[in-house]
Length: 479
Image 1: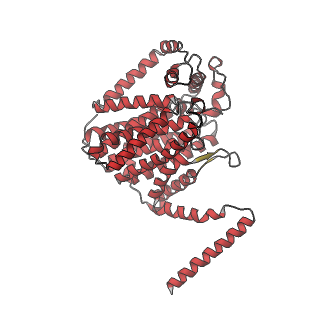
Image 2 (image 1 turned 90 degrees about the horizontal axis):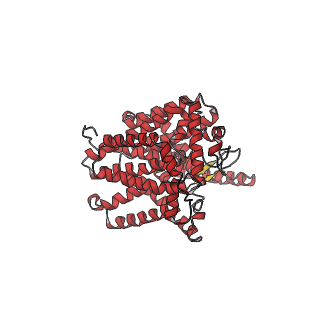
Image 3 (image 1 turned 180 degrees about the vertical axis):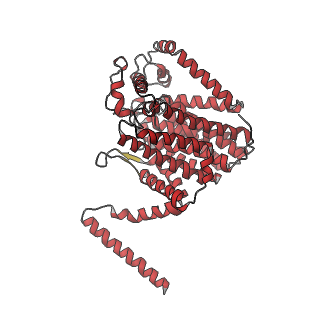
């Protein structure tokens, strides 16, 4: 009897929905048909949020951004609705259900993230454009809650780390092959390389940055395949995927990505040589101080480089230091100068999170303006992951962001040097080296507020935290 009643309810609801959907279509309302899918996703988010996180990792490279869906609002589909849903799920787990591993809150990276987020929220009250800053902070909360807090507990099972990375890699492979097919129609010419990966990635910079991050992971899995006991078929797939990604970066003609991979390889060498974290920080600080002290002489020497960005890999790479007549480089300098000028005006609070594009115009200096200079923020932002926060949220905004990175590398180094678990060691190494590609790339571009890169950035911090919390007994030794 109960089975028959259940069938009757099922048939009744199904027929009722079909009728309602037919009426809705007749009236021109075309979205009712996705309602069952929304319900299914909602149930999955509550009971199996881990599956949605893994799904997100796959679909984000394949998501498409729509700049205007009405009212001047844009959206990336299908990932942004899932992000919002998962954010609500996290709040449910935190506040109502209480079903969360609160030990994560005691982790150093988490504390650093909270400090940075707290400053951004506080700084919003002093923003020159409060609504813009509120939107920026909400987006940051989406990314942190999903890609860090939910993902950390997902990584309690170390196999999920590999699943998370490989699902994203598979999504990227589809994008790269799509790009290759389109690019081949133009004989892989540089002139069309800037947007050939659309609609999946808006430009070659963010596309190459995403590819570069995963190259260390693929490379280290190949090098240590025997010790990691990787099956021969998976090793073959990894080698092919690495070649695809390398070709993708090469034919993206993204100079920043090429440089970031060179820098990442340098870090890998230092790790193999067992150079300790403290030594690395001292060397990096000395190098930075040297650049600052000798900035005038360096700029003078760079002014002699007149190689423009051009067809040919060697000339294109050589043009990276041309601040004489390369318009792309000159415009970056213009944006950097504007950011520094903004910081001089508001060094403590900045102009507010997310406001650079709307505020920098009047802080440009005529001597640095170029033919592509704009006052409306419609041709890129600050082109720096570091000067942007400096202008928007002041010195504390920048320093608290750098603190997250420093803590992550400190924890990662301890994992690498103090664990006997080879899988943990390789994952920590590939994450830090991959993260370094983003940080080096961040000297010339800023993509961390896009979903395509946010999942990589905050996901990297989640991997380090999870490895430390769940997968390694750290020897109490300073590095």
